[in-house]
Amino acid sequence: MKLTNGVEQAICILVLLATQEKQIPVATDVISKKLEVSPSYLKKIMRKLVVRGIIKSVPGSKGGVTLAKDPAAITMLDIVEAMEGEMKMFPDNGLIEKVFSDRDNAGRGQEIIRNVFQGADQQLIEYFSSITGEDLLKQGFGDMETPHLNWNELTEDEEKSGETK
Amino acid sequence: MKLTNGVEQAICILVLLATQEKQIPVATDVISKKLEVSPSYLKKIMRKLVVRGIIKSVPGSKGGVTLAKDPAAITMLDIVEAMEGEMKMFPDNGLIEKVFSDRDNAGRGQEIIRNVFQGADQQLIEYFSSITGEDLLKQGFGDMETPHLNWNELTEDEEKSGETK
DNA sequence: TTAAAGTGGACAAATGACATCCATAATAGA
DNA sequence: TCTATTATGGATGTCATTTGTCCACTTTAA
Image 1 (spheres, chains in turn cyan, red, purple, yellow):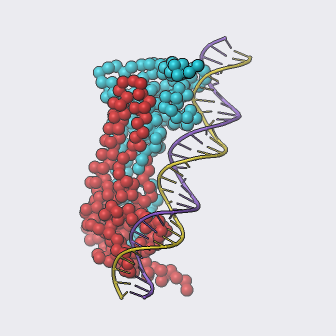
Image 2: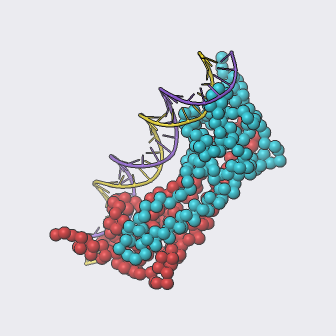
Image 3: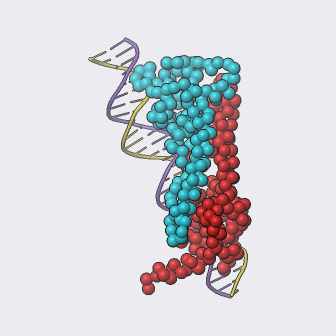
């Protein structure tokens, strides 16, 4: 009943992009340096966000990724489902139906359990879709306007200052 | 974001025990035959239910397992947490705090995300603890009283009739 | 005392998560 | 047009967790 680490990484990526100057894509290699995860793996994470329509990718020189929509239009459900797939926590093997197949009510029993967990899924869906990226930015920055930086340049600076030569 | 198959198996086990004549333990090998899973693995599943105090085990001849308490006192949360451990879906690696450590608000950002997922855990905890074993039995059997059988004998009968010799 | 049953730990196999690499396609700029 | 840059997607490898097995041990009824 654990989410994968990809969810936390995805959130980091989106925070980065939300504080990025508009219209300037951030290269995935820049992001991988900030997050200290391998570029090759990070690309897979980002692909899921692209496929889900949360971010857009721009191939080619000076390319990278940008938010595909306003933070107010991105919900936590988008992020979780992008990384984890559809919200369906119960691995329904029809076990109850099989085990009690010689009794009445076997199918009925299976359906009852199925409904219990569909209800649980629904609880999470409603909760997560009530939380938007804008909510979180507001909580983080309060009355301040969300800052906008160019993470590409910031990373280059850090590289320069980090070089010993 | 999937539960393990153990949850479905645990539910089957509890349904079996709830329809078992009081005070007669059911042998785990009998249950493993019904569920068509290996006896050795089923024992692990059941151990978790024993540790959590949902079922009681009786060692020795004519031993087995019985419900440790009334179905009305067993919640779906008990079952899920017995099998999956504490309800904490977010694998908190402190990634946001690390990535934005050179900015203000890094710790604040991490805390915001932490709270989001604690809220999700809480949603599930409240939902699952509102559903008891009694609720499910009522749904399954309606006005009928829950039947009480001796699954040990039933299995023996089936074995006899199943033998070709 | 013996047979039947649960306990607990070591171990092995299968599955899914995490990670790397490379050939390819698309784009900006010279 | 050519080149450097960057995303795409598939093949592959590694590692952790889940699933499953085995066995020596303890407990209990008869």
